[in-house]
Length: 170
Image (tube, rainbow, N blue to C red; front, side):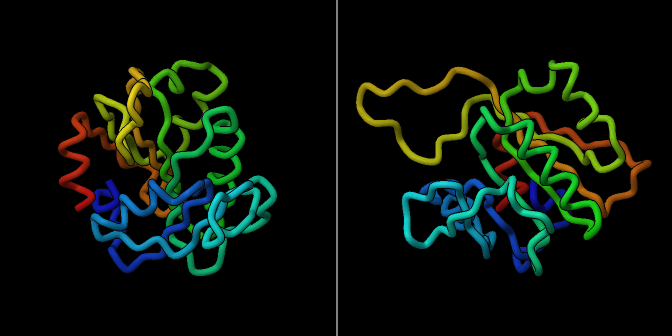
């Protein structure tokens, strides 16, 4: 998906809800460079303690904010990041459950000029193998992107299968 958005492997990417960096490390194995990791309560010392909702301006040098954030704060995080990205023509990429699209209050997020498109994933992305006896969510998810540097008249892209997303990202 990053390639579809025109992101180069040299562009700086920020994971604003990094947790233990499992997501960022997986993306890094595909060749993309995360240069900033932050989380409100990071479990690791190499992740900056930072509440993304307290950030008042887009981080200097960052082109993309890409994250698998906490779903209970997804609305606030999405709206906040999209607004922060606008003055610097930044890109926001978030993993959301497909049901996220069906709520009327969120439709404005998908009907603005910055909305660039989505990549639907048939199964939940597994950044790590579940522990024995641990269930895997059976909800479908999609990556959604907002790019303030895109031509607002261009139609959003749509990618259907995870294999394609993996091919695009690698």
